[in-house]
Image 1: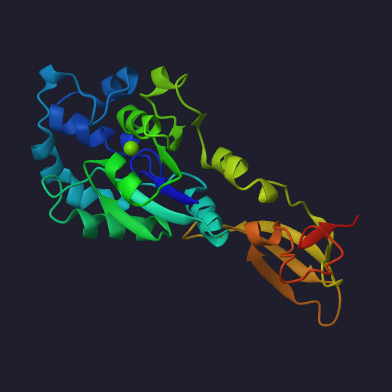
Image 2: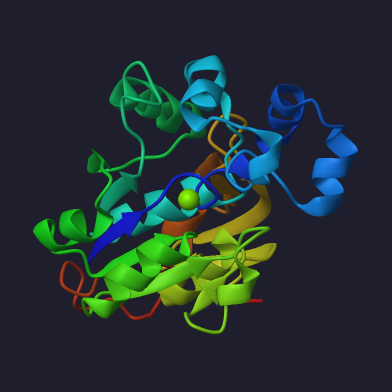
Length: 260
Ligand SMILES: [Mg+2]
C-alpha cells in the first residue's frame, strides 16, 4: 500500500508542545489554555494570534524538537519493512517556515521516522491522488473529509480537539492501535520464555528493550546452544511470519514460536 501520514498531532504531539508558546505569545496563563484545550491553531480570534507571525517567531526554532508520539517510529518502520510505501504529507509552507522541507526533514530525523517521500502541500487530496495513496492517516477533519470523498481510505488520529468528528471516520488514539490494525501478523505479544526458530534452533527471550534514540522495540534473546550468545532483533521482525516464498518447507508459521 501507499500510506500517507500527516505529522502534526499524528506523528508528533504538536498541540501540547506548542501550548506554552501560544500562552506566551497571547499573554494568557498556560493553565487557562490547558483548561480550555487551546493551542496555536484554535485560539479564539479575540486573542489576536497572527499565524504567520507566530510561525516566524517559533516554528523554525521549535518544530525540529517536537516530541514524537509513542510507537510512531517503530510502527512506521515496521510498515516499510512489510513493503508499504510511506509518504509523509504535511500542510507546511514557506510562509510559515524559512525552509519547510529542511525543517521537516530535521524533525523527522530527530523523531526516528523512516519514509520514502516527503510532501509539503496545501492540497493533500491532489497529492494523495498523484501518489496513488491507499490510506491517509491524519487528525484534521477537512483533510480526511476531502480525501475520503475521493474514495481513498482514511484513519483519523484522535487529537485533543477533533473528537467531535470521531463518528464520521475510523479512529485511532495511539500508534499501538495502528500497529494492530495494519500489522496483524505482528500484533502478537512476545513474552519471556523458550522459542524455536524455524530453522530448528532454540532461544530464550530474556526481555524487551527500547532503543534510547528511536524508541523502537527490540527483543533481547539468548541462544540455547553453542556459546549461548546474546542477541537483539527488532520486535516486529522477531514476531513476524516465516517468509514462505523464501522458505517453502519451513515447519512453523512464525519465525520464532513459543515452546514452553
Ligand atoms: Mg495534523
